[in-house]
Image (cartoon, rainbow, N blue to C red; front, side):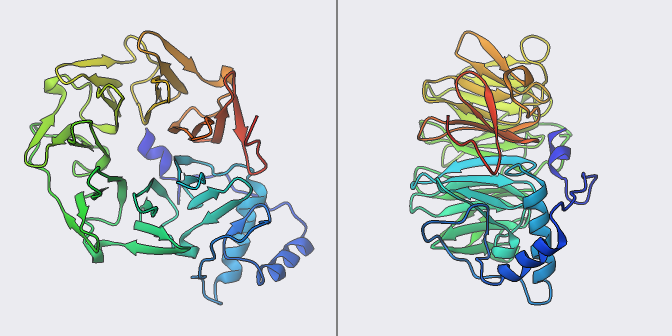
Length: 377
């Protein structure tokens, strides 16, 4: 299951071996004292944001050795790429499951982790708000990145739980956050719980918590949609809530993601039921019983020409043009079966990330993008 595949810390993990000579490591340790706290893969030709180090003298060497080990022995951007965002400057932000967040500015990769002030190293979602702030959610809370600094929000700042799974800014500029223990809304200074009404689902079964809000989005009419872990989906019109469940035709009550397409259809990716499309009147379901390989659909994305892309656990991704479904997997070079994010950037580059790293689609096949690239072509 997806939620098991992403909780890697403290579980079975391939031990990374440091292959560089000891004298080289010692040199790097000495050299590190004059370097930025950010773990840069390529030396920058231009100035970048500088963060204040949060490590103490007591543990800084140990942390640096660990970072060197990861960067040298693992060529992937991250073992798990969980989400991708592009900011107004064109920088790409990659949320990882173990290394914090990685930023690509067109020349360099910079890693920001809890050592640099990020709320946690397991990133669950990333957005850029209308003011240009980068918001990052982790299992340790919410981080707002601005002008080279992180501002963190935890339960002390009103969050219902420090385990945060989703974040969204609506058309009015309100920041919504989904935690393991319910929904919260930001007033500009702190968060406050925003409870959902009881679900119509009798005896709901969750993967982690029936109060977990896994995704938040907004449709063309200004309704806010909330995905839950076991209680279906909620539509909020600013006054009242409407609960959509399997009873109304939704394929499964455990929802991972929601997408609103350009035609205002609402798509739902679920943990056990496949994919649902809601046209405002009825649901159309796509399941492993008919057209897709597996009923676990973690992410959905609409590209610039209107194709709907979605993952299917163990089967890579599918592209749907409204008539035909096409599968992309290992045969097409996609080395990620447990896909967690799909994204098309402003330059038209198409990215897929998940368990196994980051991949870019060049129109014919997928290429694994590592710390050395290739970023283009």
